[in-house]
Length: 109
Image (cartoon, rainbow, N blue to C red; front, top):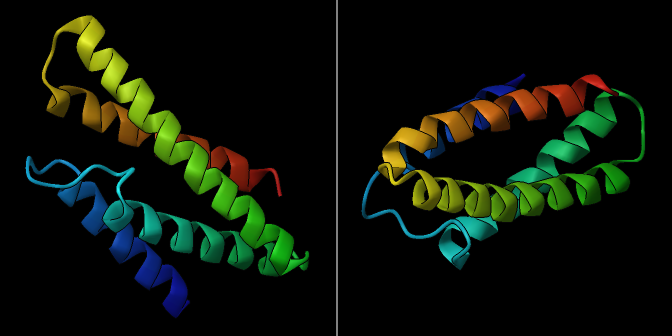
């Protein structure tokens, strides 16, 4: 239970800081490294909860974090450019897609 509370708080902090204009790119080490670490930990926790291999869960979590980081960045950047609207308009939509996709993936297990 403490891990769920900590991960939720970290996710909320990320949701807020991601919208700030001075936040570095998510693909730069200060944003990428925590995403990789938390992706791996989250994957290991989900795998452990379902009595599966935690190493495989960690690897899949890291892969998901990298796919979400780079895929989300590309999708968001391209939508902003194509639609000619401010980034902060697309950002909440990206968050909803990410949260929904994460819940969908976790519900498979």
